[in-house]
Length: 311
Length: 314
Image (cartoon, rainbow over all chains, first blue to last red; front, side, top):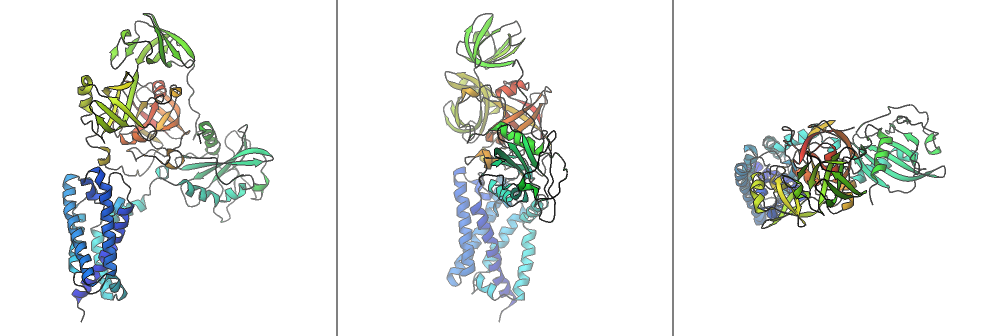
């Protein structure tokens, strides 16, 4: 007969695997030069290898908890208990020697200085691993035959571990206040993909020659890309201004004569939403907008837009 | 592919408007700052070979000289690299800096009195000697001259090597890898206050001696900073920019202001979260490293190493 205690012990396998897997991934992917968590107690040359070894150990233990039972399963549970107990001790030392350092438990997400919550969480997980020793099934087996009792225990422990996890506060903070676009690292390829999926790109496709930009540069929340083009037989530069913020940014395009630098055409503030928005022609101050080429004339009526947006 | 900085600025201006990409401030005519090599010295004048040819500058009673310290005409030697701030239409020398040098970066190696300093992925490694006679003065603000610690010193070229003479900042008491990573800013304002320092663009390329511009600590990694980019997040919320974009800077000590193009990457500057005390304590963090010419044009004193400034974004 399965007792409540058995259900609690079996649920610990799932808890441990769910905690260990993302922790391992975060450590293996961490690229911070300083290192995270207890690794900063080591000389600089040892930090990266130590972090990788820690992540690899967590990954192996998580997989063993998921799939192994019997002696192998118990070995994994003892290993997890030692890892978490050692981690709790290392966090106590870290709190004394480097009080501004995060625990590094989930890589760059664990930057909140180590406090009693992180230490208590490690201790709790060590106890969980010890409690799971002797459970005849693996975590995968428990998951396959999970009952309402398991779900209840998991929900209670999720609340408890969540209360001991400063990472949740950090996640909420990041969600509520994303990094400002002016300082956010955004790959060029993502920006170009966004450009090529836009109406402004399609509007100017007939003018643009070549698929790769001549030059790409950035100014805060804007990235610019210049493509070679030809309009009415003359070589031109097609300059795209791509806002880096917003899901449907209003991409701008300006066509300039390559030899004289004269602005031939400007298209800005396009409602690039595909929801019936209309293109707007935009004339930078002091520039007379000339006739619109065939490639863009199919976009219907035009109207003046604000002439200037600052980055 | 070399960057066409003027085309970038022009194209940015046609998309966003001139306010977002103002034209760089042109050098004054005649330029009151001259860089060159001394070809002749007399008690009344000095002749300097510049990019425009040989120019002669008269001395007056108020002319001052700096060669690691306030000095006199005797410090000048034929063949010296000098920076002359002049007046009266480039006729009279007001102040002359002799064999001026600066090394800013992270100490990579130490061998006796010689340090090898990593000045960032664009500047590479430079050697600097901390002579025994100046080690006390340097050691007050740079107590640990070991790998991993920051170094920012002003000195003079002596026998082909840079000799550190005065510290330009106070060294943090830990190596760069133990510095707590800066958090992402919650907002980026239109005005950013901090300090600016200077660097010599002629190191490795004498043709750039008169360059007016700024090396910027937050150059976009993908478009310009490149695969070897060693930029870290500094303590100022600086927007990511590319080479060729322009900065509007105001010297809070003198009131001088100018628009300067970003001409270099100053990745190492982001490690410095210090304050400039040249005219009272300013804000923490460095906005940029100006070329020596730009630093002087904005009223900076190279021997002090920095001034407080405000960066205005378009």
